[in-house]
Structures are given as structure tokens and as C-alpha cells.
Length: 315
Length: 319
Image 1: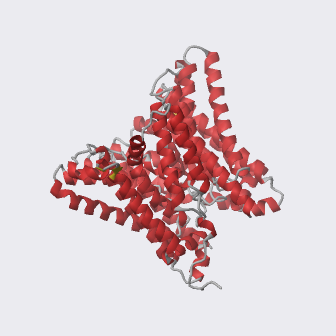
Image 2: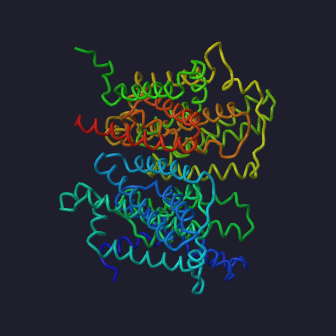
Image 3: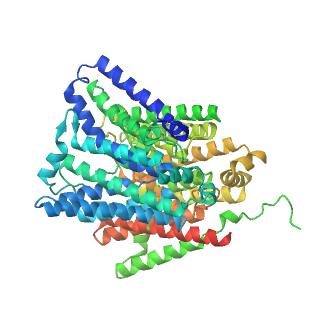
């Protein structure tokens, strides 16, 4: 099943999964409150949004880009759902469609900015991030609105320890895994990430692939915002802010390279879970929550060092 | 024949005329929107407000020139605010130790950033992002979540004082700007910095110690973030958690509006200066129009995208 380039990419995720399993084993061993079913349930629910944003971020990192606008797309999605979904099913469907459309449009602007105007990905996505944040603050200056109750309780339904939201996230991971590693489009993305020039010379439609990739990221980020709104039950213009940096950190901890063309979503999932797990473990051990920032920073540095050394050795 | 010792004009540090035209346009819009009720002293007040961003943005531009990026600028400024205010505690006698401790911490941050980036060839984005998390965690642990401290009025002079018609903050900003602008344009160090950013390998082969140049750029960047943090502390006159965090994006925005490229080796401090003024003026225009926060982000988004698109197209045409 895992052959050739797929095997090579998925192997990038191995250190992240080892770290993840080690953290879970050690925490369960030393903390009786960590291993309770309630905490594990909690923790799965907490991981869902970052896991979704990590797909969106890893997606653009594969082609050598970056997407800072995910944060504002998330915030504005929660606002649409909170503004329009409460009273009617029509409003719910409409607000979800609107959120996804805005996500896709943001991706389109990012993609065209990168391809046609040759603006560096970081700068164009910072611009769209700022612009959308402005729009979000006009629509809803502070947290407010209400999310459709039937919808949020649907997403909170459980099968075992997994909420429906978590199951949908998992299904998305499977879909994206197949797309990256077993479709022509996925191959093209990795080719663009490795070298846009060589990709173009081999007949890959680089511009189209790039634009579609940014649109897909916008869509996934919007979906992450919709899921987040069912958890917080309101809209909030700033709730997505931390996700831009956190998603990059999650993807990188999961072995996705910022240079493009290296890594797998399998790793992004582990990275997202590790970043969420740090908060949870620190709480369970009764350590001051102020240590979570330092711990996250150190985990990021550590995994960077691991990958740097591995890659240096393999060259 | 020119003497070979004389520095040739660096084609990548051309004077950024476009951003000055935009600055004039913004000033005109400002006059029209306020129906001409704006006085020169109001403009000087904007300069005073812009000084902390302006000083930190000089550092950010230098980091960008060596093909880097410093995402820890904002956290550094927040840290300097908390540390310096907690050491001063309203006592003018403690100003010197507060400044020294703050700037030493900044120097350590800059050296660590620079060393890791230059020596391990790691992505500046990730290294400085991790550094930013660590600094943030550090000051949370230091203050235990409660910002404490008091800023003596004799220290506040650097942001609040006026010498006649001109704000002291403006003088400090322009002095630092002029000194570093001269350094980048007219000294061997400056030329080496541009070359390292444009092509580190070629620079090394030509006998430039690129690693050292990169470390020095991050050191300057963190130190200037520290000075910016001190100016900010003097400006707000109190300790407040996370007060500098927005400055990371503001400094990057000002630099790229002023024509500094992400690819390294291209850009000028002469462009960053009006870049900062444009950002601050738009922000205070939005405050006058009553949509301060939302308007700031809306205009920031549009201005960055448009200015960088124009810069990119001009560079494309030249090739």
C-alpha cells in the first residue's frame, strides 16, 4: 500500500506520532485525571477545530505557500452562522453556504494574488487576513449572535468518545489523504511545491493548481469556523486569531516542510493533536497555564531540530 | 574612471518615490476628510504616536533585508513594557537599570534568533514564531498574569515631551533612522548586509561572513524592538499585558509598503519611514471617522496588497 513517494512523505509524520503516543502514555501513567474517559472526550472535542485548520494550512504548505488568512476566515464564518442560523433551517443552510463562499473567495483572491500579481504568499494572505478582520469587526464588533441549537447539538452528538464533528474531521482527513497521495491533482501539488519551474516544464498547470489549492484551503478554513461556532454557540470577530500561527506550528510539528513538497496530512493531524494536548496535560497536572506558551514554543523548536537533522543526514 | 574604492550605486536600494506619493495622497485625504480642520500640531502628534512602530519597523526592515523575518518583534515589545515598568516602579532612579535590563534581554533574544537561523539554516518564520511563544510564556510567568509597574514622569518625556514645536519621540525616531539609513547606504557593513540578503552563498564565496551578518541583523532588529517597546511604555505610561503584540504585523506591513521585498536584499529605510506614517495616519483617520479598529484592518489589507502588487509589477518589468 505504502510505496515510493507516498511512503517517503508519510514517513515524515513518524516523529510526530511517536511524540504524541509518548505524551499520551506518560500522561496516563502519571495523572489519574488525564486517563478518565471524560477528559479524553473533552480533549478529542478540543482538538477538532485545530485539526481542521491544520488541513487547510498543510494544504498550502505542500505547494510552498502559506495561508495567514485562515484566522479571519474562521472568525467570519462563526459570525455568519451566529447571525443567520438561529431561527430557521433556511438560515442555517444559507449561512453555511455564505461562510463557505467567503472562504472560497478569499482563497481565490490569495491564489490570484500569488499567481498573477506575484505577491509573496505571506503578504497577500496577511492582506486578506487584515481586510476580512475589518469586515468581521463591522459585522459584529464583539462576541454575539446565536447558533442554531439543533445544528450545534447535532455536531455534539457522540459515538463512543467521538463527536460527530470529530468523525466528520476524520473523514475529511481520509479524503485529503487519498487526494494528496493517489490522485493526479495531489501529485501536481507536490510537484509544484518541490519546484514550480520543473513542474511547469513537466506540463503541470502550475497556476491553476496553485489557485485551486488556495481555494480548497479557504473552504476548509471556513468549515473549521462553522464547526467552531457550534462549539462556542456564538459568533466572535477575534476567535480565529490564534489559529493562523497555531496551524502553521501544528503542520510543521507534524513534519510538513515550509519549503513545500514535503510531508503528509497524517503528520498534520498528529501535530494538531499534540498542540492541543499540551494545554490539556498542563491543566491536568495542575501546572500554571502560563507555561503552555513556553512548552508550545519548545516543542516547535525541538521538532524543527529533529527534522533539520534528519533532512541533513538524508541529503 | 571611477575609483574602485568608491561604492557603486546599489540598484536594489533605489529611492522609493511611490510610497512618498502615497504619503502625500494620504495627507490630502486626511485634510479633505477632516475639512481642513487639521493643524500642523495634529500632524506632529501623529509623528509622536508613530514613533514606537517607526523604530521597531527599522529593525524589521533590516531583518527582511537579509531574507529574514522577525515575528517576535511584538512579543519583545510587550516584554520590554512589562519588564521595564516593573523595574522602574515609579522611581526615576531606576530608569537606567530598567533600560539596561530590557535591552540586554532584547540582545539575548536577537542573538538566539540570529544564531539558530544562520547556523542551523532554519526558517526565520518558524524560529521567530517559536521565540515569540517563548517570550510570551516568559512574561506571563514573570508577571503571573497581572501587569504591575509604574512609569515615572521623567521617563515619559521620551514619548510625551516636546521641544518647542517638535515632539521628542520624533527626534529620537529620526535620529535612529538617519544613523541606520546612513549605515545601510554608505558603509561597507551596509553593502555586505544587502549582498548577504540577495544571495548568501555568493556573499560567502566573496569573503563576506554571511552568518555573522545575519546574526547582526537580528540583533539590531531585537534591540530596536526593545527601544520601540521603551518608547511605547513611555507613551502609554503603564504596564499592560500584550500591549505590543499588534506591532509584529504593523512593522512588516510598514516595511513592505515601503518597498522592502520578502526575498531579501531589496528595500530601503527611506521607504519604511513613510510606510509607518501612512499606516498611522490611516489609523487615526479611521478613528476620526468613528470606525477605528475595523477601519484600520480594512485599509491595512487593501494598502498592503495594492502597494506590494505595484512593486512586484515594476520589478517584473525591469527584468
